[in-house]
Image (tube, rainbow, N blue to C red; front, side):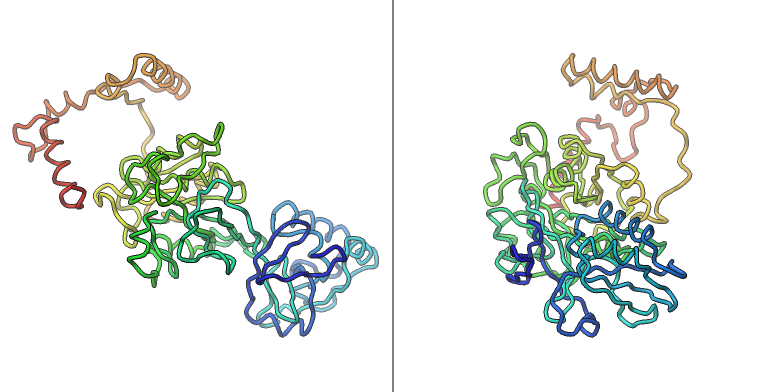
Length: 433
């Protein structure tokens, strides 16, 4: 929008009050607006029975401003009241209130109108209706690719610089039992297939070798069917192998949101960890975990994480590291939102009959390898958990347990001998040598 309030269109992108938007055409919207060019907002009035009071409008707009980072007051220039049942009026005080906010024109759409636009902000250009997607700069280089991007961004993934992530309005979605993840914005690690995009593994050679995917990984497709908005694919350590930031040659490692930014974001799901820590406009990120590729980035980026039991979700459509151990998982900032997301994603696979905790396990084999000062801190934390939850602290040794009750296929091998053999077999089967 220029200084005189006129819309300025550049590559189907738009700027309003310094906020940049990418415009996405809305199917079936042209019939309502003819040759108009303006900003607009659709307000659903299904729950209004007689009149749209000034107080009701005020609460509605306050809700829009609080809930949605895409919506701005200038989008009230043209207001479309959707869900009109007939007999519902707009009193003069409500009309004045909206005009003071900049409304120039209003109209009503009947509740049975076909292709009625969903609530939220819109842009109308020469009669064509567009959904504005707010563009956020990927300041921490956590994303490999945006799901929706401007034409001048290389869609092949040659994003040596910063990309912009386009996010949809949170107002278009109604949370229901069928779409429990509606309005939730998700970033997906780039070893999961996503329809219409390439899977890179953060390797230029891999990216150039394989074509775009014709379908999404089943676990990601399930998220889409539950209403989640996948806004982009996040970076990872190349081929999901451990990689320090200084070893990331083809695509730079994400910048950490902690301290001075030069801390490692962990791995291999480093992009997912850095993104959820850095961006409050993002709700959940998806990673994969073999032996810590979700838990480690969560720890290093200061967020919550969940690594579910192997087999709880399908691993089809994402590039495995070790198939016996790989599992999709989540990272997030809000614990309740993580719980809701996990319950929706895992669904009936979750076992509700979880027994109560009886003790805090203390693995002696592991802690003997840790520096004394760190071991003392760990023991202090375990004691606090024990006291708070009124549990016991249970010491155990894997080596001793193995010696007393070894598995049948171990023969007379010690734990160390058996693990060396199994590690070699796993690496051989997965082509890791």
